[in-house]
Length: 76
Figure 1 (cartoon, rainbow, N blue to C red):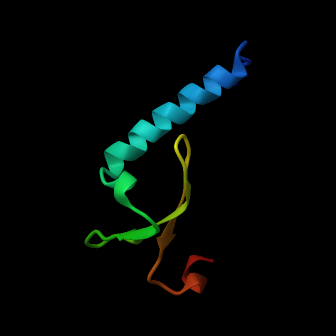
Figure 2 (cartoon, one colour):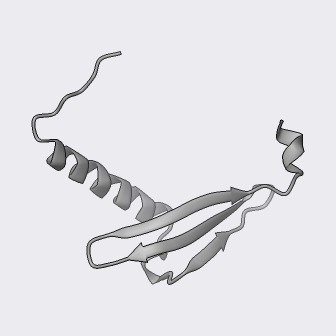
């Protein structure tokens, strides 16, 4: 596997963040209206929990986690 070493690392990081942000907005269209938290439900699927950590003019920090209904020992 080769390593990528871009000349302008900050521009590369900015482009990755912008792309990820656009993908996130496609997955969660109402993301910008969420103030604190939300839970996504889908039949026969685990719940997706979203928590807004911080939201400023140029930065949105969120936490995504799954809530599995089974006993955690079942996964070991």
